Length: 158
Length: 93
Image (cartoon, rainbow over all chains, first blue to last red; front, side, top):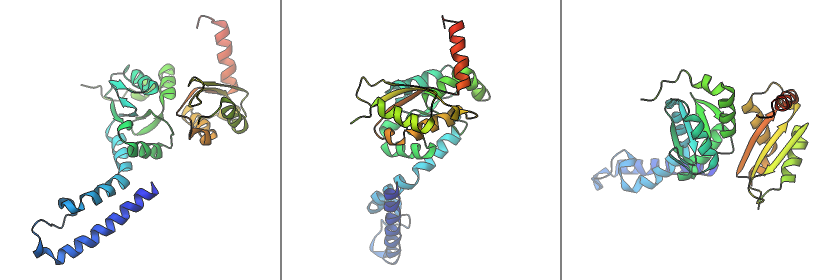
């Protein structure tokens, strides 16, 4: 994480320097605008920057926007791990909208989620922005009735 | 390179001082997945999530090698006693 962040900062200062030099050299190019994202030369740099610094924002936004958010291996209709499959099965017992991201597709997202929740394994379940736990905890809460209680004020899916 | 059942047991024993501990290698012996049943006084007054976090923390080193850790039970001695009793009075369950 630290190295990605460092690269992000390095890329940012580099872009800042390049844009300011472009500002003075504007007449040489018709393509360059003040927005570094629009010029091809800057795309890799800004991509690196995004991947390093905004992944935790994505996670934060995910859990805020989605009443039930699941980070799992595979997708809900095709889980690629028994524990992820179990979590989906339990949550599907309830009539609530289920949002999920497949962490197998994105190792950086995987690390960002782990850092966000301070939890080492997947799946990870968030309900109304609160980290609930993995499949053992979700199953246990299902059995004790706690899960029903947690989910009761979520608007059913359409 | 995996982790042995004994390593998991010894870390949990030294950090959580359990009155009952059952560690099962569920990876078929390659040391990458374990199921844990643990009874400890240290769980008193803690939510399930916190109890699982305590188990994860106790196994911090081992977790680098373990891919799946299933904490089947993390209960206090009192809860454990109750569960044992209800199991005995109701053997079908």
